[in-house]
Image (tube, rainbow, N blue to C red; front, side, top):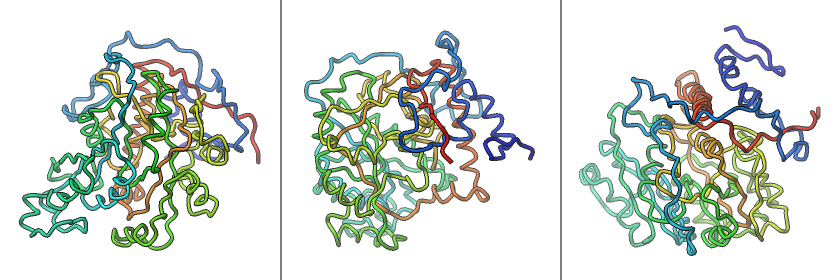
Length: 423
């Protein structure tokens, strides 16, 4: 396939088409932002970086999804985000922790239940025909019972974690493979069941700091806008040894209760020992670079407010975990065209950005990723020769960005502009 060379990289025909579509939004999106040192960018951004000034296209009719698309999918075209909250800003905010999971990962919830005392919503995806032998079982049950009552393995959670609400989501298409995991559908089901003023969507493999609900509530006093997002710094625990089976991974916390840091000081010590790193900093540095977590961790004032405002994004691949106000017909849903692994959270952050949400970074509180066996969805994402998941999501994301621009116009929050190139 013919292509052109961009900054030393050969870009194929498809990528060239994506570049053409997006050049008016972010010219270097497809070639990815190259950071030349932590201090070599302009955090105030630049109009030039986001292209020429454009008028909003709100007055134009929005295209409906194509006819071959599932009519029941909740997509950008079917969302109403034009309203405002009908209720006044809460004096006593409450926060739901919203998660999705399969039965074989519910063991990760145990430590979270000890640290998060506000409501927890877990949407559990299961296949009644195959989810019969998991090491999550907390009660004795026959395979026949589990096949007809897949919730038997988690009944004991109601006693151990009274703040959690489990929502069943049965596999709807018998031909659906595990790598086609409907992650954004599950997230939206969780949002449908929120009864609190705010929410935080995380994956079940993230464990919060012990004081995270309190820290969030205290800092919401400084974040009083309906369209404000509070970024939670994310880290990951380095795997000390093999973790190919759930039983092996579960042993880490059982053998060492401090394996996942629970306080700011514990996190700093874990990071200093190189046992904790910024989440995905080794294989997806753009995902959380804008949070500047290394600086956040070193800052002596990080344990005090107010939250620091983010003035520009380093990349359209930024995908932080955020606390949001929940209001009907104002808070966007996740676009359900994204499934499996890849781009399913980036699209949501981009949607918030085009809705002109402001982003601020929470002081002191954090989440830490617990190691676990690789999912089928991620394996399929990495196997581009055997599966088309990677290519499909890569094609969908720039299309989605163009749809956002067509609907909302240019976002106010610009791209950070690099000052110089260090070799």
